[in-house]
Amino acid sequence: MEKIKPFVVLAAVLIALTLIIPAVLVLPFSDEHRASGKLGEDLAKTPAKEEKAVPTSSDPAVDVAVFRTARSTIESVQLEDYLVGVVAAEMPVDFKEEALKAQALTARTYIVNRLINKDTLGVPKGAQVTDTQIHQVYMNDDEQRKDWGADYSWKKKKIVNAVRATAGQILTYDGKPIDALFFSTGNGYTENSEDVWSGNFPYLRSVSSPWDKESPKYNSQKVITVHEFETRLGVHLGSGSTIGKIVDRTEGKRVGKVDFNGKVISGVEIRDKLELRSSDFAWKRKGDNIVITTKGFGHGVGMSQYGANGMASEGKDYQEIVKHYYKGVKITSADHMLDTVTAKK
Image 1: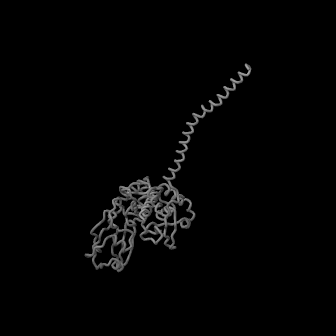
Image 2: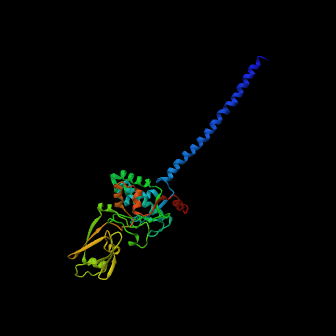
Image 3: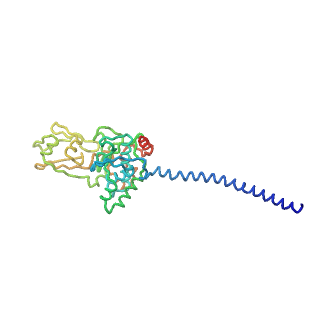
């Protein structure tokens, strides 16, 4: 029995050790396991945050029903793909990246505003927007390939990058999406909204746009006959040396009103009726013709596209560009607004 006791004691010690050591080892690893779980949760959240901040065109949450005018059909397009198609159609791809980002931001703001307000004015039943200048010009991927040919790859990549760099962002004023109007080229200034259309919008104010002078569309000339001029405007020129008199100019330095011997016509109306590029115009008579010169191209309200490119060329980023052309706006997330749109489906 005395020989057996040491073995019993040894066995007891070994048994005790096998019970104690795992317990000792488990305690610190249990704490570490909890920390590892927290880290895993943080890592799991990181991609979700990135995805939310920079949604890709593969996100199927929001679709846009585009009426394709040429074919009289409705094309359902994912939101980001739609924006790529708008930027591709609305702005030259060789513009600076920051200008393209500014265009993507205005395009997204426009369509989000339209979607959340269920605005279907000017579109056939079942569509939400057309592919024309009435809303936003749009071309799909097949049309881009055809239009760009051998340059398709780099042009597509450049525009996709611009859209994704601004993904989920829109322009707001007092918490609501703005009417993000834009045009090609200014006359050195932009217009107050009420000088072109009815409605005074605090963010659509006249601002300087000196970069427009570098645009190839800054100056233009049009020649029409005296008879056509009189017919379109409903005026009689007579034989005098003066053809109308400008009696008012807008804050954006465009023609506000012209007095034709008592008949007063707005500069915007004259631009429309004579199909001029801008309401900053001047004319003179040469024989049986009227030679009309204009500065700028477009209605002049909101962001000048060539102005945006000029700012980008000087090193301004897209946020600085849009905040110059739209006064008092904020760049905010559209996520909650788009959630409202999808919830209504």
